[in-house]
Image 1 (tube, rainbow, N blue to C red):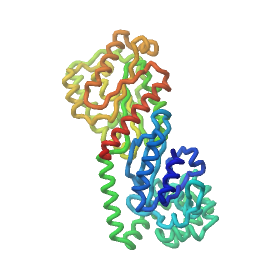
Image 2 (spheres, rainbow, N blue to C red; image 1 turned 120 degrees about the horizontal axis):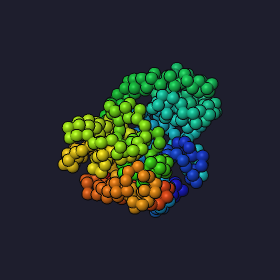
Image 3 (tube, rainbow, N blue to C red; image 1 turned 60 degrees about the horizontal axis):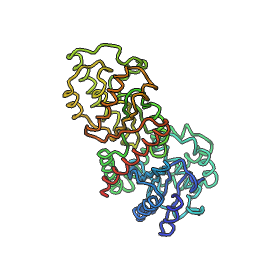
Image 4 (spheres, helix red, strand yellow; image 1 turned 90 degrees about the vertical axis):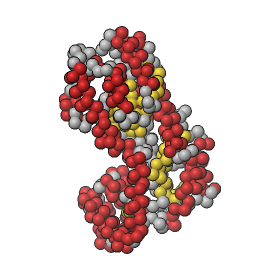
Length: 434
């Protein structure tokens, strides 16, 4: 698929280069593929990228605008995942943290694709993570040193235009000598220089670029590229094991560094108390509360569900991460006794109607005998009742899918992955108006 993309771009006369992590391309990649294209050719490059992927059985899961135009693909049959980032410039919050307009003119041919010049690649590897995260990524330090050693004058000239002569020479010298801590501590000064020099040299363009970035951020808040997935099912269905495997399998689409996992709900004001609580082995051991106590308990935790969505979930999905939640609010429909509740179902339904909904709910189901062979924390009758109650969650608003949990944990996780791929592809079509 990657070979077909590069060949197609060559045929179409699209000028492009792979910015970094290209050593094993096109045969293999574990990273996103960062591609710089000429500004006027980006949409044409995007069209050919999507078409080539489709011809090789890859669905477009997500087209998202970060500082780049990001494309996430997956093959539902093999589970293979590919992530392309199309760059036309290198920006931080709408500001060009380095002028890359000459990169394509200085590119070096490497088989099916081109790569940057030594100084261009070294400066990109230095600043792309430093400006965003305040440190130099360990994996790029050797290549930065060698690039600056090979062409120190070119590196200084490239940095000079954005950060001034003095800071440019200092950065190159520190990197050549391994002064990574000092470079990391300079990020605040670098950001100030970036903003100040951009406003002084190109005030109108800088203001327009900052405004465009704010609009892009606003669009992403309204339609976050990440996904909230809830796993449900009676005890013994294998939620925990399958969930861990699912996160591992989705590493090519959702960076583990950006994702979060929660049990029941994201903690807002109950985190410390829940952290101190041990694993539950007898969920129905204590008697239910009365109606008044149940209403108070429910109200407090309902508020945590409400506030948890914008405070804990949205920051993850805004960055394009995966949120995986075990159980969630759906337990109130199925197993109130686990929380010592005694509530009318009308109250539970009313609370649900006012909650932000997850993107996808996966209910793991298996025959009662199978569930009992794995876990026996409640009676056989209760297991059978819970299984039927979870199956009825499909009647609620939202996207609920019943998954066969009789398979091996790996097979269950693979089927969950395919379901998530289908959901994301359909969501992307709706968002793009296709």
